Image 1 (cartoon, rainbow, N blue to C red):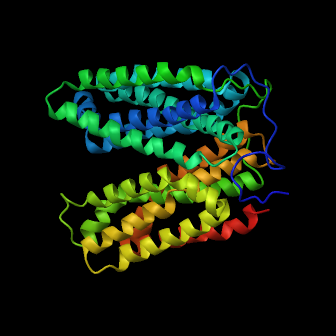
Image 2: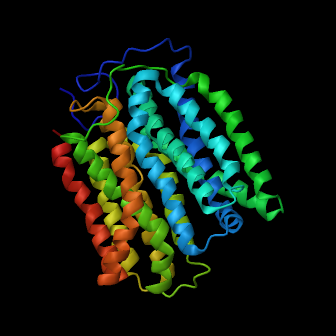
Length: 397
């Protein structure tokens, strides 16, 4: 039997292909279209980030109200993810992803036109639900495409989400800085997404797995362990986003205006590592990649905390990005190969658990920092990431 650390391909671990409608495109076209599927939600969510202040001002919100309204985005995502998996099983990933992207395109301009908190919260809920559905079904698509290719592709797919984030944020910031009205900038972003959607959608998979798939199933067995690993890794990523600049400011004395450079270093390192991650997984095997990644990430947290200067701490941010980069893609590949649950249920469960780490993780880190210190909190986060390497002994089975 082929070892569990192998990536995709044929063999005993390979799940039989689901019943599908005809796929009129080549494997290479499907791979490129899957990269576009990951790029699109990254572009969309980062296009929203620069217009938050404009939406806040138009709706007349203070900081506390904005925080409450932003919860609607996460709530919509968490509720939509399990249902999207069941819908993809019945209708195929192509239809769900296309509908999700159309909803994202329709709601993005509406976010800056919302006149009050209730309207903004409702639009954010729909926007978040569409994002959650896209996040879930694009991974279902990626699992099938990777499996049919016979080689590791998942890290490269996830890299395009990061690239989409960078391009979307840079494009929107450039337009707004040039004096473009927020609505016009959003319309330009939507036009870009629709062009890419029109190019990619015909090559997305239309597989239908089970017409009687339940709308939700609790993760069990190995799926629960995979989801727990994703929770920890998304928690670390969320902490870098929400607490990285605060750490450099409070613990290392960096100028707050420059402290965002830590997350930039982390995100850039993660993107580069994911672009080369498929070759790493192919050469080392999935489980060795997870162990090495968790170890490198822990070393990064140690450098980040122990470095005598803020500049030296940046090396820690880079190492955390490199170490974390390929663990989540490996987990999604495993979720597509396990036998405890159908992939149309397993991948939504894993996605939901991972996304929960992004939502609640930074808050948990804040409570821990309040009770102890930010340094202690980052040490605990590093140990949590290191513990992921211990999970491989069960994942190998």
